[in-house]
Image (tube, rainbow, N blue to C red; front, side):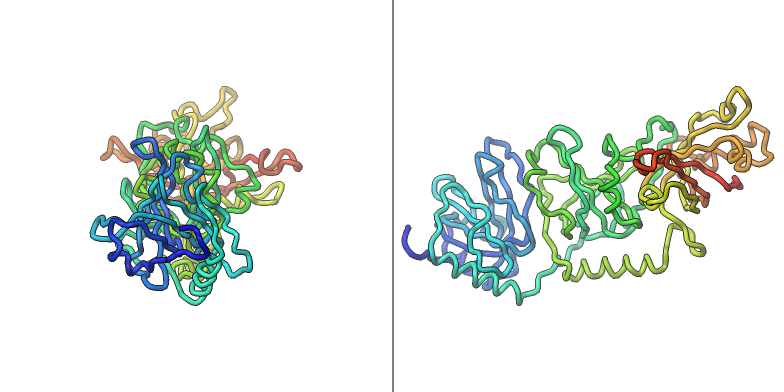
Length: 439
C-alpha cells in the first residue's frame, strides 16, 4: 500500500470492515500498563476516539515480542496512527487488533506544533506525506473538543476507600521509583485523607513499618509532596517489566481504573492488576478542577482529623520543615510503644525512655518520650496497673476485641531537632514534649 497517501477509516465505520485490515488515526484517551501475556508476547490495551466517534471509545489491542516495542504514551491527547490493524467483534463492540505480520503504528505529540515527526514508531512503520494531514486535523480537533475523566460507578476518593476492593481513582502521580529489582512503586494523591485502619493486637512496634517501601524517600522527593492528604503507595510487580522506563506521567493527573486497594501493616496500598487502565487527564478536567478546589478550601480551613479549632501541623510538615529545630502541635494516633511492657518504660537509672510510633494521614514517624518530657506526660501516675490501663486506651486496646485495636486520635506536642545543619532531614529526630496523658 506504499504511495503518497493512506486510506483512513473513521471509527464509526468499523462495523463495515469486520475481519479486514484497516488504517486508523485517533486520540489515545486510555491505556493499560504493558505486561507479559500468558504466551510469549507482551500486550497493552488502548482506548481511542476520533471526530466521528467519542462514545463508545474503540479498543485497540497491541501485541509485541518485546515490551519496549509497545506504544508508550507521553502525555494527554497524544495521537496514534495505526496501519493494517484487523477489525474484530468482541464484547459487543468492534476492536482493532495488532497483526504481527502486517500491522504497525506511530505515536505523535498531541499539541499544536509544526513538528510532525512521531516520537515512537514500530519497526515496520513507514511515513507518508499524507500523515501530516491526518495528524494536523486530529490536533486541531482535540484543541476545541473537551475531554474529561468520564463517569464511573466505582469512582471514589481516598477518604472513602474500603479494604480489598477495586476502585476508580482520580489522582495526581507525585513520584515513581524502583523499590527492588524491576519492582516499582507509584505515589499518588487526591488531596483527601485515607481512613485510619485497625491494627492487629499482636503486631508490636518492631513489626510496624514507617512506610511500605523499604527505604524512606529522599528529602528532595518528600519536599515536593503536598503537606495535607494521604499519599497512596501503588505497587507494580515484576509482571510489568521495565515499568519505570516507559511510564512518563509524573506530576500529572490521571484516572486509574480497576485499582485494587488492600491493607498492609496498617497502611493502605494500591496494586496494579491486568484489568487496570490509566487515563491521562488535563488540569482543566472537571474532576481535577474539583479536586484542586476542594484541596484549596481545605488548606484555607486548615483542617485535620477530629480537630476543629487551633491550627495543627501534619507529620509531613514536620518531616519536610526547613527549620533546624521546632515544636508543633499535631493530631496523631499512638500506634505502638517500645518497649511494650509498662514496667520496662524506665531505664535501670529510673528515667523514662521509650520510642513511640505515631501516625497521621500523611506519614508515620518514630518519636522519643523520655526524662522530663515523660514525667510530664505520665504526671503523678506511678501505679503500674493504672498506667497500663491508660496506655492500652491510648493504643486502642479493647477488652471486647482480642484481635484488633483502634488507636484514637490524640493531640500532642512534637518537637524535633537536626543534629547536622548540612543534613537537616537525614539527621532529624523527633520527641514528644509539653503533653499530658489524660485518657
